[in-house]
Amino acid sequence: MKIAYLLVLFVLNGVFLRGQQKPKEIIVNVKKYNSLNLSEIAEEVVMVTLESPPNLSLYKISKVLLVDKFIYVLSGSIENKGFPEHVLQFDLKGGFIKELDRRNKETGVLMKITKLFFSESKIYVKYEQKVKRYAVFNSKGVLQYSKKYLDSFMSVFNNSLWNENVSFDFDKGVALHSVEKRNITSNKVEIALEFKEDLRPRAIKNKIESSILSNYSVSGNKLFIAPYFKNVGYIINNNAIATYEFRLTNNLPGIMPIKPNSCMLNNYVKFGYMSGRNPFVYLYNIVNNKGYNIKISRDENGQEISGIQDDILNTGFVGLMNTNKKEIAYFTKRKYELPEIFNESDSSDSVVFLVKIK
Image (tube, rainbow, N blue to C red):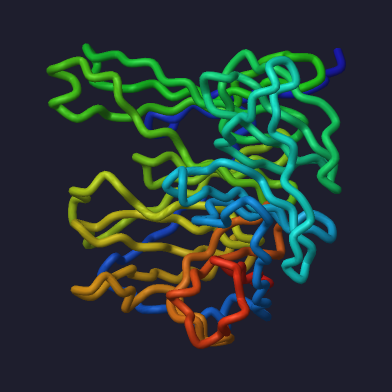
């Protein structure tokens, strides 16, 4: 009998995985940390000053995609207090080209945008939850189609919409997370990953159905999933799942519900965690197994005084984010943060720094 494939299902620390490889354990000594010079992991940084779009404000960029010869940004507006509102297209020098169409073809109403993704040479724009629609553009920003979606989704990868569902078992004190993928062409749904979250006593006592979903990012042909409440990251490549378990030693119990965003940056896993009140970032290279433990701290005025130091363009401490292009990360700055690089003729409120990762 010919075996077409082998499906493996097993349990590890409350995590159910399919196609799972042997977990990679990474020991992180919380007491051993320092700042990191950007030049240690990056080859170059290119600053792009974004031109202000006519009749639109460029305010608080929350996502940047680098697609072919274009930069796409998910931006808010001053009127909307910076919440994501529209997707803007720029050339690589920062020249404004256009706003991606966000008009509902059925009602004619302008829709607000919540998410921006890129996969398989297509740009996916997700509209606010109550609308239940998403639009697909080609790499040049030309609308191909828009459609309703049955379930919400957290990411787009391998021609599938990836979503995370949560159910609660208060008798056992756990929340059950299920990551599923819905094929865009066939609409077939498969469960890719399942894991448990231990609920806090107050949530169990009062039966509070509240949970924070994982961070999702795509880097080249890899999807990285980082659950908020576990010191674990999963990399999905084709049908295989690689697990990276970060063992924290000398750690203080985290007492704040916020940790830095985790994401994939080329061959680096950026893993955020809390120790007491202090946020940390751990950068781990999955190729050479080298890691950097970085404490993020600020002074009494809110200025960052430790973290990832840009020693290439000397813009201060930076937070690296994922562009979906595996070799390129990004960070943004506002004019008031870098007044010395602007002159009176500059009308842009933000600049984007494209970082080529080694």
